Image: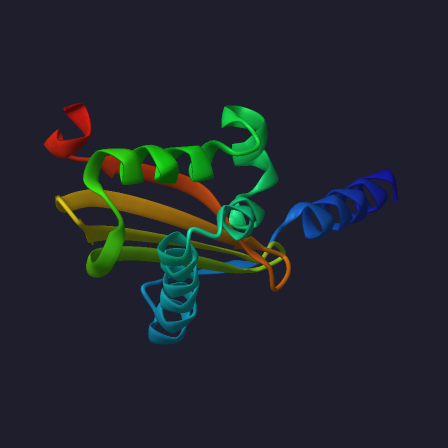
Length: 147
């Protein structure tokens, strides 16, 4: 009887400890959703709407790097290479996890054209257990930024 109770208890614990999840990569509807956020971000860059840019930044990135870190980087880039003109998506990596924990990460590698040239940029966004998508990474690289 004790063995049966022990087995039942172990099975119960295993049932509650298990998580269910599926992982999807680069699904078309996720890409559509991610491209819309990238478009919104660069519309804010074009309009120099720094408050909207800072609103798109996740709390974890703000805690790590500062409250206005992305808008400060955009201002710095504008001071070095001029105003934003356009972007082209070069590559993407989108990972959606569904199940016990729902999370989607959107990562885009871009060629972004400014007045004085092209800057390689990587933007990352994340959606976790809800509809809101927030920026969790931003990287810009160009020799033009060194001058």
